[in-house]
Image 1 (cartoon, one colour):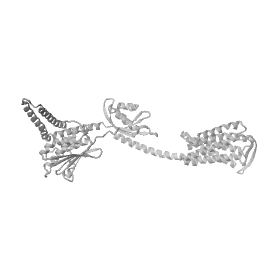
Image 2 (tube, one colour):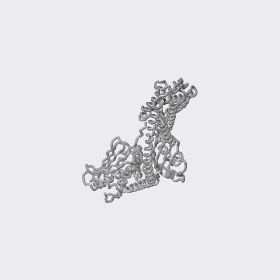
Image 3 (tube, helix red, strand yellow):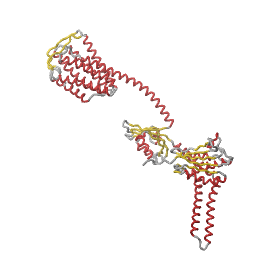
Length: 616
């Protein structure tokens, strides 16, 4: 067998082998369109290679013309597949140039079959011969076909299209493919086109051997696609390893979720559908196969909580990203269940929320425990208030005795005036006004005591701490005088109102002041003093301090004194400071004790201030 036959046959066989491999790849992955286009390009290159070999071995002009005519069909299909491959692989190339090249090559098939023996020649008149690799090969000669000029123009447009696609891919950052595939395609197509033009115009006397350059193009394209497949295979192996690890993580997460008793859900904001695990469905009272929509879920939410749930969902979807809420459910059997839910939104490229994922947990038992704890706190606070009645009895008697005594004296004076034949009515009116004022004073004292001893929950409102401190100090001033204790009050100017329950705060202040007076009973010294002060503690809190001039609290007892039933008094119950700290913490404040450097003990607590609406 001749060397030319071996070379051209092997080249065509290599192209067909690569075409078959890439066709199999496409059959397994129908999205691998680049592999399919490369398979077609390699197949049509092999067809043109066989046509070149046949033309070099042609015996008659008619045979040469016949082979060249069908060779243009292979060239047309080769050009079309190459154009589409370039656009898919590089992701670049002007569409109108691609349509122009493909349309022009398809149109030239008409003059190829109808305008002479083929697109190159109207008629092949004779066959020339020359030596190639030491063998005699055939060269066709004849009358040129004018339509060949349009075919040459289509090849020039093809080169322009390929160069434009390569430059665009380079500018977009896809420089590796632009350099390896794009530049190679431009180079080999340019060389093959130049060789065919030089042969047609007789500048060089050689056969058509464009397939040699196209085979180089096929090798470059096949290498790059092979590299892509190798990278894909490596990624697939990594993906398999990752999937195995992901499966392990999923199993661990499933165990963690089951241990935490969570239910997982996801709301599709586009289709308004809800996906949920079986645990979540059981929490909300849905069956495992029931189709869920957001409206179905909201029907299970307690009417009193629906507005809050809708607001959290809206805020999460509108850009907050995440939200948390505790709400109630009403199950089909009318059972009420408390649920804690946490959700997080996912957004598309335009920033629009498309999905909210979250978890839910049954917190009914925790809510019951919190309610029981709160009830117990109220009971303890009530017991503490009752335990102080004995200490407050003398103060109450003194406070009421003063207005009652004044009322009695004014009533006796009025009676004397009425014995006169012409009583002074203006003086009687003044006496009655004094009686009314003293009566109101007695009513206020009794009302403060009644509200203090009455069982009630926290009723938070803005509290003027100056007035609150003044009222408590006024209530205890007589007891302080009897104990020879001086009460001092210092309230900062422009102190903002605190947010709290006045009755409970009175109880705390009264307890701290009484404790201070008890501490002074055994203190030696000329000055027996208790100071009550109120000042701002930053921008969001008020600090109240009750300090005495006694011996102070032992350093090792500063933290223990707030424990239940811990007391330093011989007859103390050990509940006053514990109750006081509970009340302050219920107000979201803090109560602590310290020993100032100047001596004595100081008890301080903070309260949040009333937040003002910043809206215009």
